[in-house]
Length: 287
Image 1 (cartoon, rainbow, N blue to C red):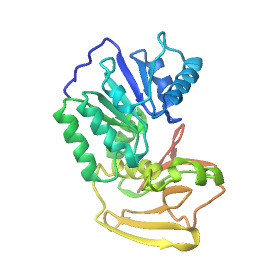
Image 2: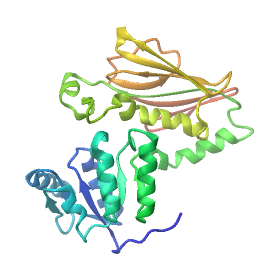
Image 3: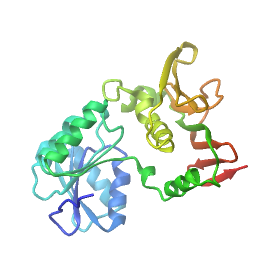
Image 4: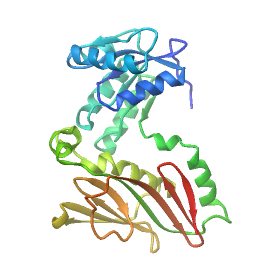
């Protein structure tokens, strides 16, 4: 990969939104010792300042970032090398393109866009403007994945892959369904598929080395207010996707969506001789 130029010794970040997830990335930038947050932008400058004050109180930089009351004003700043964009998916593409045209490198939240055509446009504009684009899927950079790939490809590994099961869910309560922006179809048109299913689908594609399924069949499950999609790669390898208001899962033999689950993050690859499980904080072999 071509190393793209940065104008300063440390990467100077601007946050384009005060979304809650941005607090984690503020802390990550501080701990990396390779970057600093220089600015935060919101549609309301007071909101940006409150965000800065809270984050500076918990994880301070030597110089407090500047608060902007306009996204474009921050993009026009000469003191910013890269921007982090955790805006809702429905409006994010517009500002990714604006950031690229302003010469800023980009880290944006997932899902990358609403369609493959939108992603291609984003990549083309970033390339034309000489900036780097990355999406915010952290597990792709885990040291566990190369180890798992070695096991999958090893002749003495798990054997032929027979089944893949991966699930990521949480219990969305009434407040989540009525007030959280991820429940707003205007801002997050893909719902749980884009929010949680992004991880589960990406894991299955990663295991399959990005090969797409050869067939897909969708059906609606009215009782559970969910949609089931059946995908097939070949006569042996297949998976089910269940998407509802509270979770997006790719499951094996799961008859219904469990509304009582607080949080589940699990990936399993079933081979002809052994199976592997990737949980949130561990990898274990299942004999």
